[in-house]
Amino acid sequence: MKNELIKNTVILTVITLISGLLLGTVYEVTKGPIAAEEERAKKAAWKSVFQDAADFEEQEFDAEAGKTILSDAGLTAQDIDSVVAASGSGGESLGFVIGVISHEGYGGDIKLSVGIRNDGTVNGIEILSINETAGLGMRADTDEFKMQFENTQTDQFVYTKTGAAADNEIDALSGATITTNAVTNGVNAAIAYFSSLEGGN
Image 1 (cartoon, rainbow, N blue to C red):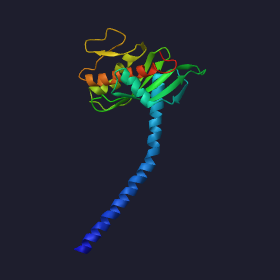
Image 2: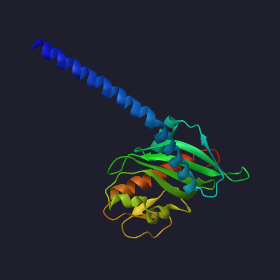
Image 3: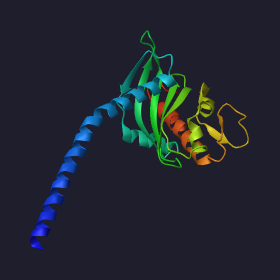
Image 4: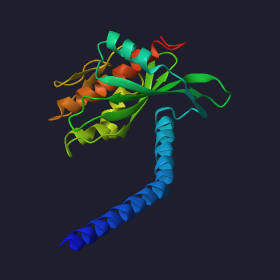
């Protein structure tokens, strides 16, 4: 009985070691391609919200200062996770692409990139990560919804269920008010942070 127990313990230990080694190997093999794909998606999002930009340069930013700026704007469920300067073919500054994580999504965090021109006009938005309800909240990632934010200069967007009547009003997604709110506040967070940048309004 004792020998059987020792044998089983050794077998389990060997299996555990082999499994750990295999998992480690798979991680090492896949982490490079995964990181490359994330980088590609990020750069594609920058270009999507600033199509006329020729170059993008990631900027250093103070995450804690960002939290304070957003908190002062009443946006405590959002975080800034990146700031990228967009420039034209002649090197002229066009504006910034601001990465935002909105923690108010129905299905979890929503990550988006928001392009804002130097005059404060929202150039466009792109959603990098979203896990909302299919057929409802996932419609936030459609051009029809995202285009409502484009080419608008405002201090704050609001959403409405009765039909947008002003430039800063967004038609809420039917049956997905929580998602609408999360994305709208994410864009508002980018606008609030943009106003703190040099050259921001």
